Length: 194
Image 1 (cartoon, helix red, strand yellow):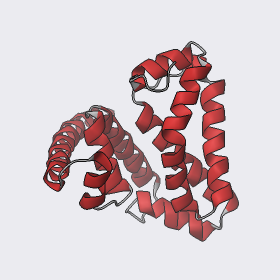
Image 2 (cartoon, rainbow, N blue to C red; image 1 turned 180 degrees about the horizontal axis):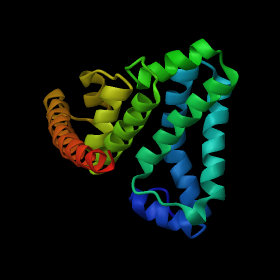
Image 3 (tube, rainbow, N blue to C red; image 1 turned 30 degrees about the vertical axis):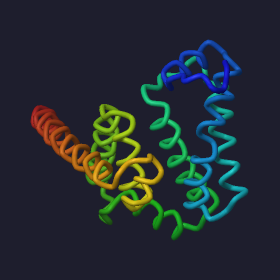
């Protein structure tokens, strides 16, 4: 697999499933540094961040035959998020874990009902984001989850700030529509149960 080849993430996933070392190396080279930056920013510890990324790629290789990845970028960055949360939960203080958890959850009432609702909402948002075009999803992720300013995103993607704002507006509208539809479906589901 030549490095200058333009190969899609979907092709890389398929090659990885087939056991391609070259596909794994390409994925690693393409994503490891961005993943490391996210982990390091959250953990504020270079060694722990490197360990998180190493664990994710080790697991990716070991489980390559059973992968069910629709979006490689989203899968890898979700893995970083979950690994960081687990690491803080295990190694960090209770206060660090709760502070980090609250950065993903805005409610403080941790009843079972709210936890289930939060998990449903998180899963629904993940599904909605998976339906978006890759560039729009990445712009949304950088702006809303990583808190990058529009100017930095524009520079990163070699786009105008107007184009980035357009992507953010489009994604926000799509997500509102998706969440509205999902909420109706969830409400009907819960109505049938109760």
